[in-house]
Length: 150
Image 1 (cartoon, rainbow, N blue to C red):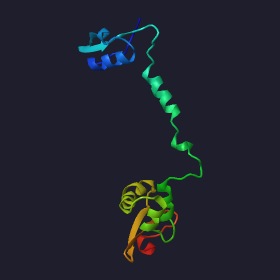
Image 2 (spheres, one colour):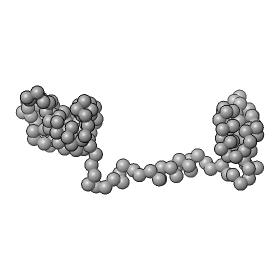
Image 3 (spheres, rainbow, N blue to C red):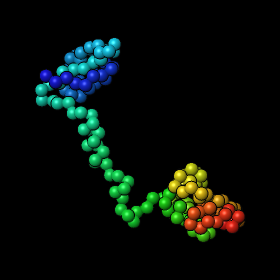
């Protein structure tokens, strides 16, 4: 007769026994290394599958981010492309391309886009005509100081 895995809480052992089709009254307590543990006998037809095998099966069914088509790009990549243009991008352009609200776009520019940037790259903001314009400066490729980018 096989036994279930060891549970540290009796209610968890009872719940697992119910899922395995075993009466909850069959849960047995035993002491190991000063801890009270609980388990139950499994019927011979039900075999306990190791948790690692379950996790492995779940991971293989999930599509990975690297499995995306080459032409498909995320919103953050689109925004970083806009910001790398010589004039940068206006907040309204970023909102139009991504579909974000203006406050969400500003939050992404301050938190998520800098994570994508390499060392030495900064996002510069300037105001023109009541609109915020953003651009990536101090780029390794362009080697522009902030004063020249504005």
